[in-house]
Length: 461
Ligand code: BGP
Image (cartoon, rainbow, N blue to C red; front, side, top):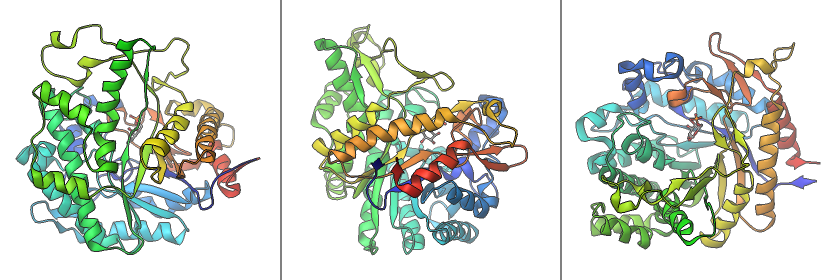
């Protein structure tokens, strides 16, 4: 019998831009805008306009989630929806009403709402006017938006997150060209990484000043563990730097209130160090998280780079390491990601031993599969046994970490209902509940029925 701690969160995660649809939104976020100007960049030219229609069907969607065993849901408040005037941070009442209804529907179903404030969805006007996260003005405006959210919803939402996977903003927008505006500029990427850390700390500062009873705030990081290709010193060194850049750059400020010194030294040496001030360092120092959300999909395996770092012209962090495909690895071919459930145990032990054993939860984990229609049975239910196996294996390793003392209090699958995903649109489906995007008919998959049984029993026999 595998039993999880009492009051364990059995839930799932989505985000505003991926589920709501653009209905009644005054501002466009960077993805809304990207789709307007370049629809062909999106799989089958399906943009975020309708997504999974959560804006209109949140009530029945939340009921379905409950039927699939979820006792908590993380979504996000869209800055581009909530705020009416982006300069003065006044709110749009219609959006306030919408988010109130979403939160109240969750509470009525006995679900714990978790709200995130930034899921890659910067209002595009703030990019055009200020250069987005490159600018400290935008950091300040974000703190104002965060404060509005806490004041409006903090009476009922007790668990907050400042960002989802800030590293994906840095990489997608400033290094590897997979998110609009597709800039390649290592120095800007470094500044953006710093600014996102500062934005998180400033939002936490606003949160703490409000003294919300029972309120807790954290951030959500994709803590993809780094594994070196071999014991050789050069591979170990590559893994050390990859870990500094990919994980510690956000994890250490969030938990300890300062950046990893080894990374700072490297950035200074390479002449790409961010601009900071004493006052900002103080804000980062004083405003660390109460808990952590960890998104985990696949490990990061690296080896020493083929080219000597200094021979690579423009500065990029990955001049210090190359990706390594481990022979014999298991791969989810649809998404191209390695499947390695043991990493959840490694994450659990790393947090226990090196990060104050801070309370944490798995804020995303999941398996994206294409063309799931092929697994539909005669009753119209998708028989996704592969997803059941995937989740069970990950939970087994997570449970081992908890049994050995890691303070993990929940597991959120990505995602409750098949939702829209950035450039992949609806190509890969992740949900416990399927969504026919032509009719918006939603049906619990076999995995959703299974999730209900483990949620009801708080584990399995
Ligand atoms: C995470 C994001 C989610 C979601 C998920 C699945 O990085 O936080 O928003 O999209 O990945 O990835 P994808 O949709 O690219 O397959």
